[in-house]
Image (cartoon, rainbow over all chains, first blue to last red; front, side, top):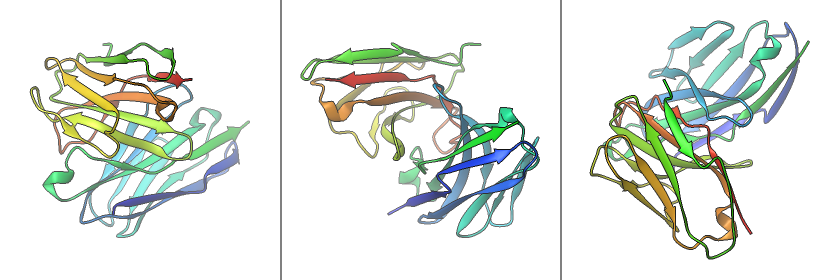
Length: 113
Length: 113
């Protein structure tokens, strides 16, 4: 059974204090790993897709990396506007898994000035 | 651009009542999805529609029905609401199944008493 575990559950950072979020997964042949950002009271917003081990994607202060067992979301010199819940999701490689993302429970990040 | 629009934003039901959650997208996407989000459990797929005229079960379909009314609209119906269906419901769309860059609506907060 596909499984996604995110850690830590919550993270409190000072502005400028870099850190990393972890997403570990078990899936039958990874097709893609996705990162989303969710603000309170809103729907998730797409950030990145990673397809193969060793791949990296960057957007502003965020950088996502992928290995065969886990993905990391690095937040460099965060600002208060980076406060959000970050969700990780995986898609298995079988065609009957298309359309079905398995989400983790998320990491809630709070960045204080 | 409105993106994905969900109605209503909030709803309170009594056990046994029925209701329909509406969702519409204006991005000409082929695929649409319904998720529920519960604290500590992450997003779970209820049903999805790969294309107009098709629907498939997700991880937690029991107690729900869906209708893909046309390419733009995908509704979720609760025939006889139960307290276990208290949740936040999100509709999402993507260009096609297999391309799970999802665009989410802002959610419906449903309470079943």
